[in-house]
Image (spheres, rainbow, N blue to C red):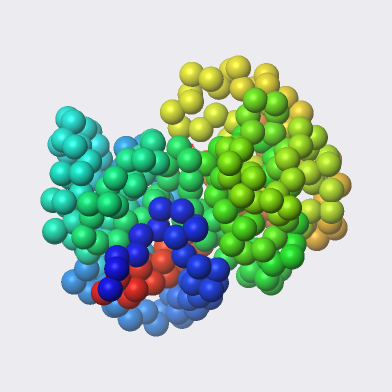
Length: 304
Ligand code: CP
Ligand code: NVA
C-alpha cells in the first residue's frame, strides 16, 4: 500500500477529509468521557520544528501520549538538520526509526523533499505556504457549532498567507464560498486562486468580503519569518481589522475564528476576540488535539 502523506488538504479526498472530521468529533467525545483506546501503543511520532509553536507542539505531543504512543521533539537547533545535513538524508534516517513524522518549516519544497524520501507518513505542521492541520480543526469547529460547511460563505480578511492558502484548499475540498479581502500586494498565490474558480472571490474591500458571511476569519499581518516587515505591514493593513463593526455586515449568526496566536487590536479587536458569543477561538485551538489524533489514525491506517 502506498504511504499517505498530509502536506496539503488536497492529499486527501473530500470523502476522506469528512471521515477525519467525523472521527475527530468522536475522538473528542471519547476523550471527554475518559474512554480512549491506546491505538498508538508502540508508535513513535517525530516532531521536527524549525519555527516556534505552542498549539501544534502541545496538541501533537499530548495526542500521541493520550493514545498510548510517544513523541520526540526535534528542534533544528539541536539536530544535524540545523548544521546542514540534507533533508533527503534526514528523511531516510528518521523514517527508518519512527512510525510517523510531522514537520514545521519554512519552504514547502522542504517538506515535499522529506516526504519523497520518507518510508512513513509525513504531516505538514505549517510551512510558509500552507497550514492544513489548522484547517482540520477549523472545519471541525464549524461543524460542531453550525453543522456542515458545504454551501456556506467564509470571509478571509488580511494577509494572503499560509492560512489563506489552506482556506482556499478547504473551499475547494468542502464546497463553500471563500471571499478574500487583502491589501493590494498581499494577495494569495494567483494559481491557487484560479484553481478555486467560482468558489473564490478576491477583493480589497473587507466589507464586501464579509457581506452575509457565515464565518469570518483572519490571521496575523506578519507571519513567522516576516518579523522585520511588522511595522510596514501595520500601515499597509490599516482598515483590515476584524471587529464588531465589520462583523455587523456578516450573517446574524456568523462565527469568528483565528488560528492564534493573535495580536489584539491589530488584525482583530480585543473585544471581538473575547466575545465568546461570536468568537470560537478556544474551541478551535482545542480541536487541534482531536483533529490531529484523527488524522494520525487515518494516515497510519491508510499506509499500513
Ligand atoms: N495555530 C498554530 O499553529 O499555533 P502554534 O504556532 O502555537 O503551533
Ligand atoms: N500565518 C501564521 C500562522 C501561525 C500559526 C504564521 O505562519 O506565522
